[in-house]
Structures are given as structure tokens and as C-alpha cells.
Length: 254
Length: 299
Image (tube, rainbow over all chains, first blue to last red; front, side):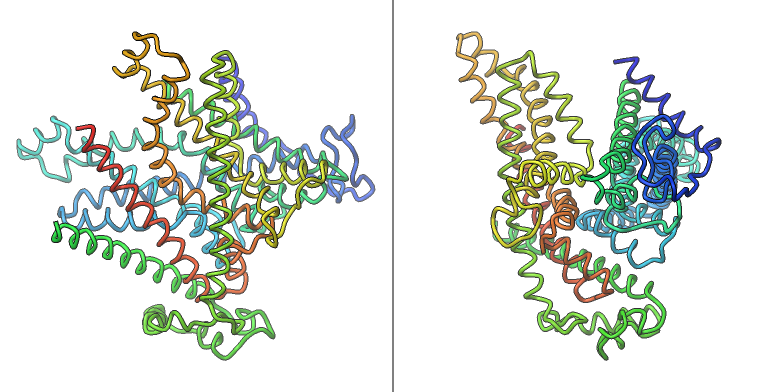
């Protein structure tokens, strides 16, 4: 199992590294619908683009979109958690109450609504993802904040006259930031899953380069005639998710 | 007692009002995002004067005030195409409810079958757990596509879409149920492992009770976590339903929301989001009270 986990991490690293050296998938209409072979390892698309190049580039785009959304979401959650810590108790409780109410609207419905109403683009997809995942992450960080704030040494610091701002920036924030980095690895697979579902339902970047969810949505109609075309993005997405889940297991173990 | 009940009802009502405010803000924000000409917003010839007034360029606060003023008429609302909103929601809700109930039934069967197989043939338990984890991490639309390919195109057993007969709901419900059944199996098998250390199981083993009897006792103890699991998963179930409905062309709440979003039909979007949020809120209230009761019993 250890080797599987190391191989999974290597796969993610390779996918990221490939983005810097990957050639653009050029259109060759005379090479359309080629089956997998020596010339094209995973075959070609209706426009004659190499499916292999497309899925590797698509995986990179999916990972970068999900990671960017997650980083923004965590930063915003941390900033607002800091604000909640500084606020008087009643205001902080009201904020937590609003977050609980927000959680009752399923994330995918919020993401779809935002994604459809904003013009197509990377920023729209990231905004939709951030808004759909924010409430759950914020709830988790607020709960952790409560636990951390109850620690003996923090109570002691407050009793000894340390200001709230000082306690937060020197004692509470470092712990929350460290836990947020774990949270990043733990949540990334579910964000990739949400992103793929959103793209499948039509929330798209509008870019000429398709990420994995969009490739699945576009090529699913070819499943009977050209199965390689539909299966390549599907298997790549599953491989990426598997690798990310193995990374999660490594983090959990550590 | 009466006072406590009254307080709980007031708290629940307060929660629902907060959700209503959030959904209203989200809807008006969406309306505000959608700027441009009325023709563009209303998609050409389908536009009406009412829709035009809704999407006219106004400041956010004015749009919010107009929307809130319009809220008491919610049961008389019409969508941009001129059809009443309530019957559309009712029809969509009936389909989504049927899909949800069927998925629930299938997932219980799948989850319990996996659990029984793992319990009585420990040799295959690790493989079953790995399989369940793999299914759990697979996107629901991939499961749906695979089921369509297998049961509709390859085996010609079930229709690949539609909502005219109960048969059409089997594949989509199975799509959701496979994922939730796998999740249920993982949850219950972990809970069963914890129960192994409980005194009543140790005593039963000491009295040489059969594995079957002990399993039934453990299963009975899983009832509460099982119910709480389903109540917590309601939001995920709806998220799964929106994907599956669009894949299998079922006219449920998810498809209706997608349709409303494509049409920029603010009233339909609001009604849809409110119904879904209200259901999730109701289930979260039941879950919270059950969890509190369980904690009180344990204490």
C-alpha cells in the first residue's frame, strides 16, 4: 500500500510538471477519430487533437481550478474566523448562526446559480466553487477556533493580560493556519468532484482547453462509436481522484 | 413543557426566516448579476413585460425592496413563460421525492447486503471496503453514464431516461443508491467494529450465542446512526438528484432549477431554492433532536 501511495503522489507531481512542457493539442482534421495506436497513444478527437495531450492538460486545469478555489476559500474563511474571534460574543454567535443557515442550501445549487449567471470564465467557475464550499469550510474552522480558544495556555495568556489581538495572531492563528493546510489536502478530492459535476452540468470556463468534467460532458455522446474518446477523460478523472484520496490517507496517517 | 415547545417552535421559525432571507439575498444578487438588454436577458421572443420589469437596470437595494414586496404573492407567482410557479414546483417535487425514496430503498438494500457479506465472509471484507471506497469517490454522473451504457445500451433492460413510468426511475435511483449504499456500508461497518468492544457483545460471545444472533443485536443498535446518517445526507442526496435528473431527463427539482437558470427565471429559482432549503432545514432539525436524544440516553 505504501508504494501505491508514493506512486499516487508521483502521479500528481507528474501531472503538475507536465503542464509546463506539454505541447498544445493541435487540430489535424485529416487525423480525426483515430483509434489508440502508436502515433496517438489514446486516439484523437473529432478535430484530430491528441486525446492523451487533452486529458493531461485537462487534468492540470481541473487540479489548478480546484486548488485555486480551495486556497481562496480557506483564506477567506480564516480572515472571517479572525474577525469572528475579535467580535463580541453575541455577534460571533450570530455569524455562526448565519453560516448554519447557509449550510441548508446544498452547495451545488449555489454553485450552479452563480455559475450560470456570471459570464463564462475561470473567475466565474472559481467564484461558484468558493461560494458553494465556503459555508462547510467556515463551519469547520469556526469549530476549530472554538476548541483552540479553550486551550489552557490561551486562557492563561488572557488571564495574564495579553490582548485579544495578540493572543489571536501569536497563539490561535498559527494553529488554525496549520490545520487549514491539512484541511486543504483533505478537502481537495471533494472539490475536484464538485468541479467535475459542475462542469458536467454546464458551468464552464469558456476556454478552448477543456478540463476533465467538460471533456466528459462533450465526449459522452461518442461512447458507443468511439469509446476511447469517452473513457479517456473518465479514467483520468478517476485516477486523479484515487491519487488525491491516497494523499489524504498519507496526511491522515501523519 | 408547553413553554419549551413554544421556544423550540420559535427557534425553528427563526431558523427558517434566516434561510428565507439568505435565499432572497442570493436570488436578488443573481438578478443583479444579470445585466444587459432585456432582449438578451429574456432570450428573445419569449420575453414578457413582467420579465422586462424584473430585469430592468435598478440598484441592488431597489431590486431587493421590489422582490420583498412581491413575496406575499408567492402562491400566485408566474414564471417568465406565464405558467404558475406552484404547480411546476409541486410536479417537480413529486418526481424528486419518488427518486429520493427509491434511492433510499435501493441504498439500504445495497448497504445492508454489503454489510451482511462482510460480516459472514470476513475474507472478502477488505475487498468490499475497498470497492465501497472506490464507488464513494466516483462522481455520480460517471456512475449514471456507466449504468445507462450497461442497462440501456448493452443489455436493453431499462429505459435510459424519462419520467413517465416507475421503470424510468430505476436506473437513476440505482445511480444515487450505489454511492449512498457504499457510504452507508462504510459507516455501519465502522460502527459495528466499535460495537464489538461493547459489553453486551462480549457477554453474548461468552454465552456462545451464534454469529447470526449477535449480528442481529448489533444491527438493531445501528438503527439510530442509520437514521441520523440519512438525515445528514439529505443535502447530498439533493445534490446527487440534480445531476442524475439532468442525465436521465427527469423533470425534478434539479432539472427545474437548471431550466430556470437557463431562462434567468428569478421567481422559479427562488421558489426552487426555498423548497430545497426548507426540506434540508427540516431534516437537520429532526437530526439535531434525535442526536440530542441519543446523547441524553448515552449519558
